[in-house]
Length: 357
Ligand SMILES: NC(=O)c1ccc[n+]([C@@H]2O[C@H](COP(=O)([O-])OP(=O)(O)OC[C@H]3O[C@@H](n4cnc5c(N)ncnc54)[C@H](OP(=O)(O)O)[C@@H]3O)[C@@H](O)[C@H]2O)c1
Image (cartoon, rainbow, N blue to C red; front, side):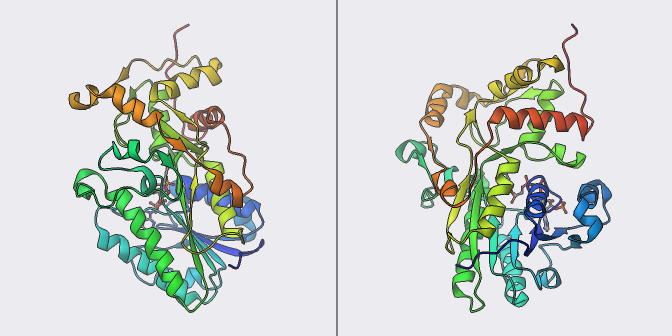
């Protein structure tokens, strides 16, 4: 399919976000013109870092207000764009009809643009590995782009915490199907990023992620094992800058085909306690004192800790597909943690909890 060549015009949704902000920066570094879509362009606490980017001074980077929930609001922004990086979250993933509607809004604006040739849609590894029954990961441990969660499991419902994974799969298919049916000649490629770690560019991003927020809490000496992605699941990471490079590379690639998806992860994985310990190992000058690590894991899961850990350890994480189409060398997680910590201190003003001596 047609690649979006260098020096094109690309719209980025969710541009004020952690990943979106890096996608904007990467595209600018490659020479593109970028239309950064945010919900409130007057909120300097969220968009000040975009305005501070040098290409904003020349007009190569522009800011545009648009809310996914309002049909037609991307019409003007997308008109004249060659590509769209649809990075933003939606307001909820637990309502399939709503998720489909937000996709329809973007698709309609792409169709009306008459110019967009590629849409890169940000999904998640949750659309690859999030299982209602964790033992499904034992049966199918190879985590590559062909792996989907067991969609026939009746427990795969928003009520049981699967809404995010369901919503991401819906979005992937909605865009691929719309592009396949379109007469205007665009395609849709999906990126499935893993756990993004790396530097924040704006103070408001310190509370998001959740991964940079968890590091912020560690830094403050408030360590609490994260339950959100499954009991005792290790972090499976990608540096946010590498994730952005995957997005930009997929926008430009002429080796991808409508409907394909690409997992963006380094294939490194690390348990929560080891992430905590990494801070002192990579930045001993901080004299970081993490304090005790709280573990609120429910008793019924604690009893199965060894089993859960062995299931996660048995996964085979693959990234050969993205590396075959995007020239990328994934950064080591140590570097991502170091740069995240330094940015939390420098950009968000976080005060680390330190040993007395
Ligand atoms: N962070 C990770 O580790 C990770 C991993 C896998 C996948 N992802 C995916 O990557 C994407 C970006 O994640 P992130 O971590 O960068 O999140 P983030 O920092 O919270 O940024 C998300 C952005 O989405 C925008 N947004 C939310 N609802 C919107 C709506 N109704 N209309 C327009 N914009 C809306 C927000 O805009 P405002 O600035 O206006 O609030 C925000 O800037 C998401 O699709 C997420 O599912 C993230």
